Amino acid sequence: MTRWFVSRHPGALEWAQQQGMVGLRRVAHLDPTLLAPGDLVIGTLPLHLAAAACARGARYLCLVVDLPAGARGRELSAAELDAYGARLEEFVVRRVCGGEPG
Image 1 (cartoon, one colour):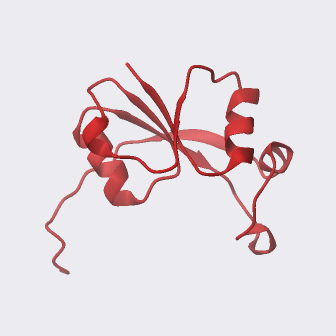
Image 2 (cartoon, rainbow, N blue to C red):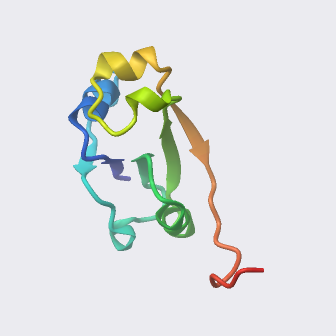
């Protein structure tokens, strides 16, 4: 089982390490074709990638942060992530249609 950490933000990786997460395979962008059943994917993914990860049998833990508007769009430190209540929440995401509005 591979434990993937998907982020291009140094503060997010530092936060994860401070939470005791070690042995992570860090990638800036996830290629779902590399996932195997039982893998763990941690990060903040677009829905289509989260669905692809789940479809391949991986678990998806979303890095959830309740940011105020003034904190968006800039790099955050591990301490700031803590202050904004960063946490991991597990989601199971499934694609239900081929993209047609309905």
